[in-house]
Image 1 (tube, one colour):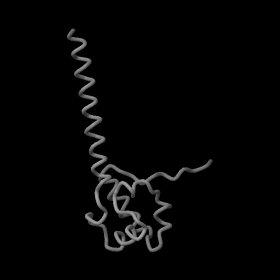
Image 2: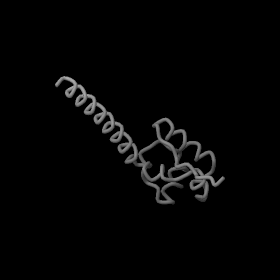
Image 3: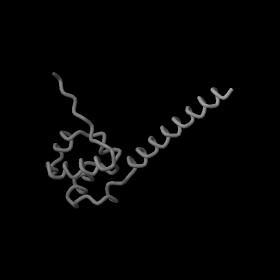
Image 4: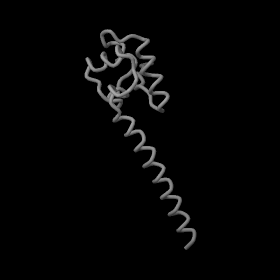
Length: 97
């Protein structure tokens, strides 16, 4: 009986860790771009391209962002640094080898 309790306790612990991890990433995805401390130019260019939440941003690749008029490598680096700090990344561009 104690083996069963131990296994159940371990299962609930892992489930709790998963829920905590998932809820953290969901809460980051719901952050509004306008509320973050990006440069005015970066914020404006994202909004012009209808990117209003971090969740929308992480669905894009670096190449996608560089296609936005007026958004250059410096702005992309600013966004990547922010995402990296929060444990997130831009979508990786698939390469055909």
